[in-house]
Length: 255
Image (cartoon, rainbow, N blue to C red; front, side):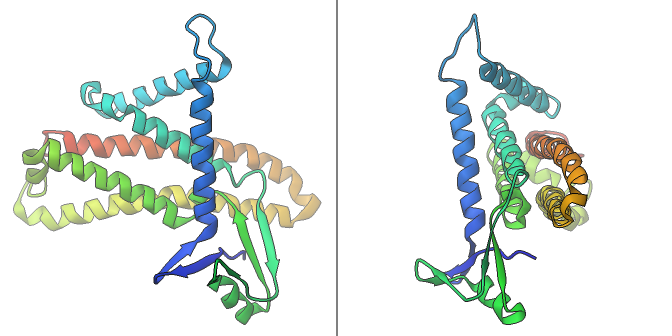
């Protein structure tokens, strides 16, 4: 099993590979966005411009399926950013992984890589993975989920205060604890669903690579299927995000 390069900074465990891959994903999303608007044309749009226009329409339709576009228009940019970030993040671990092997402890910027020291103490060697899908890390997907859930509550409190508060006591004040559990479960399922699907895919890829020549046919098939899974998971995350926003902005009591 590969180890993550974790250092401890101010008492916090920091996964350097997750930070690296989040940075890479963000740069790719920014670069794709800049390239798509570099040569805009109304009469002869390029392939990338056409793709981005299709993607914007797709996000609009996803939002329209969750709420009235009078409310949802403000979330198009967020939905577009999320679907691009998550899809690209899901894909990064498919082509290859960068793994380094270590027989002695090492440090970076004066901080010991604690996971390597722990692995050496247990097994006598350590394999550290640096390049992977950031969404194959639960802390990343739960972080995304936390941002979405926190933003949905912020929207409910600031834009729909009365209905937002009333919901927690509907249909009876005794249901308040149940509604709190519901919010916690939404956070966990949103983050863990994405993590579970992408992590399982990368584990299977590692198993197929370990099988050598016998695993190549299965690896080719699974790589193609992983493209589909990565796209579906990005769509589901954005769709659920808009559903949660819609619930907090709705005047109905039964959401």
